[in-house]
Image (cartoon, rainbow, N blue to C red; front, top):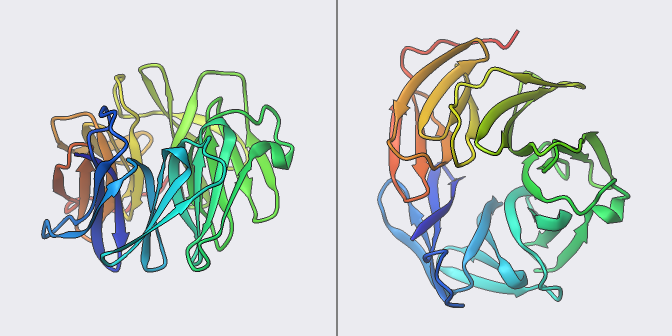
Length: 286
């Protein structure tokens, strides 16, 4: 089974995993598992999961063909969109009541976990130039607000009512993971096999990346010692001052979750490791 997401919920790390993505079967085994104990918290057969997020006390999973699962404890509720033409790529908790999923072709899915109502929109609804570009990531930034990331150096700020394009180009560089640190938006970027890090503080600037070229997209997190960046090797620090803290031997880290003295990493194949942060000192990006 493949790990789709590693999520924090009530001080626990939960793994969302689904059946073999290469399988053509329409019914796959999906599971929610406690990363520390290995306990299966929920299990069900259905559409394979593409993206997942926490939302209040629930886990919300988005699949192909317009299917959403809301998981509370062992109870799984299935929600179906009227429009099936969606391919979700990432999800966030937009507010305690609303999960947001972004997807290919500029699609956005809003899910109210209380009423189970959904709203499917696209970038074209906000008059975004070239609205068919794929959305690949998102970062919540206050209740009802978020940043959206996508192909062609796309960064959008959504304030709950409208979208403001902060960055856009015709390049092949795609943005997919980001964090906010010291009022700066840090973004992992990829163009073919090349990996980059960009910062946006009103202007988009590319900075040194410690991640070597290769397949798979690096993921990113932040801790008191600086930025955390990983794909196979994990680095901590800031541009110009990176330190390697571990090598997991497989280039497919999908989650970096910082703790007080360590970072928990999760790979696509389900490997969970804790890398110590002891010896790292708080850094500034100044």
